[in-house]
Length: 392
Image 1 (spheres, one colour):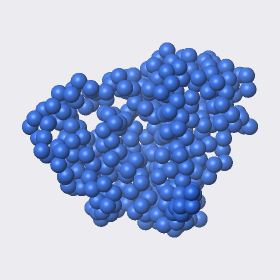
Image 2 (cartoon, rainbow, N blue to C red):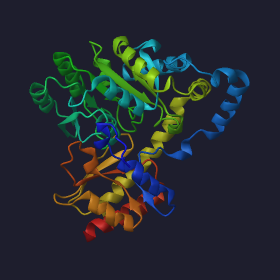
Image 3 (tube, rainbow, N blue to C red):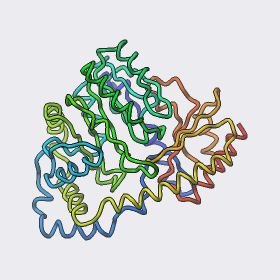
Image 4 (cartoon, rainbow, N blue to C red):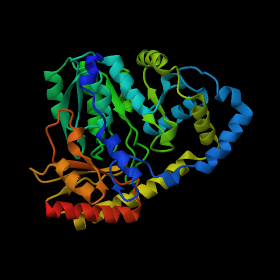
């Protein structure tokens, strides 16, 4: 074919995670690859009842075009829930998106020209890398430790790259590492953003999934100059298939997201927005989340304890206080992509860590998801993976 595509298509590639998820359709594959919530907690029966009620009472509204900003009762619920994270905003400061992934894409579209610089944690979320790559930026990686992005390294990076367009960070149970940015670093991050007048894109899909310790305030809580754009979602706490996320930001920034949303898809599905709002009005979402957290705590503990028994002693892994993932470090010289090839022969899947480094220079890591696999599959899958590692 001699079709001429846009230059950006040369840098875009399929997500390895999405490709690996195709393997989950094979019933004999134990998958630790995707960030899939536990499906047994989806409120299927409750949504059946609510959907019927909506179509009986609000059918015309649910099936009609709506405002770009989103269903007001849902934005009111989100604004109220954000106060738990120390964020006090009006519903007018919230835009409903089709998942928080759409918020990432919009951030790239709003801020980035080809060649512009993004400052991000190293490693960082593969979905964000893919979303931003479409706009042909440069990624400037900042090292992390167990307490999140290292602020001294960020200071040096900002001094060297004061023209960067934004800082991208996942403060709670970071994807892929499971690490959480501590309180002082959150404050310092905002101070540096204010000093350099650079926006922060705070991606926080996992904040409500803390199952150990006390919840920390969001980065947005410390925002004094309207520079922090908060991306949230119900995909990890409710139903990912509804694709409901949101952008919470200062009105000047939110206006840009609103304009981009209008040109993209006009608005997120009216029906699913009303479904979510009706569910959260009739049922206790916090009670629902509590059940999810207990399941994830049990599965995290089981995965970690099994790795201690089955993995070689020179493998390291994180102990997240919440979220969906643990991050495994293999010895230097071990390529996780090669480990995956051997693991797939034993019907076990995971995501090699090299994909989470935007500039692709580290390969002895992998991400394991514990939220979706059953307890029996966690034990069996980690045993098989441990066997592969010992053989290699």
